[in-house]
Length: 247
Image (tube, rainbow, N blue to C red):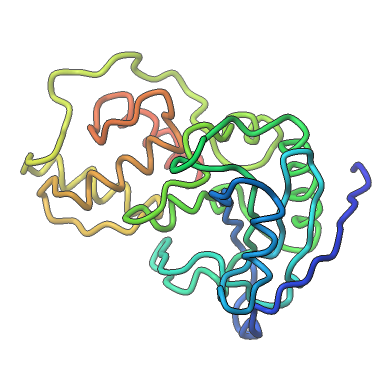
């Protein structure tokens, strides 16, 4: 493993991780700010009451802000696989990127290499399965979009980090695609499968706005070339593939 160089830049925004929680999740974010200096200032400002364990700038410089033994305040109101206290279960990594509200851009090569090295190092200390390496938008689909559709999840998976669909799947959408307003047992089954995978979603049989937002989060991570909130055969094939990988 390449040497990991970290710059300590401690944040006061943390508390004790409860002893009965074991770290088994990574949550990736983008900062949504214009540069690293602005992001560091906010993440280390006691008034902001937000933090992450690590931050990686555009050039690959990695900062440690909170000890892994402590609970950083990065996930907020989030859920995954029935768990609500995501901060207690996870390590949060912020990637410097202006985000959707400024000038959202691809994540540079140096930043991605540094992220891969950091995750590999973290996993020498914590048992974190691939299906629990997630984006903020996965654990908070009703309010977050980061790290977004320009983040290269496929690349990470090719390095043995995280999940990605690997089997053949449909190439086109179909006429029976489910969308907002639909109501059927098929919708209920889609909701059930998304919840089994981990997303916070109630099985109602109605394709409501919550379902649409969860589908958008799924697409943002696993089908980033088309994010429309419509659950078509491409989404169905990818979701089944992913579920089969975590059986």
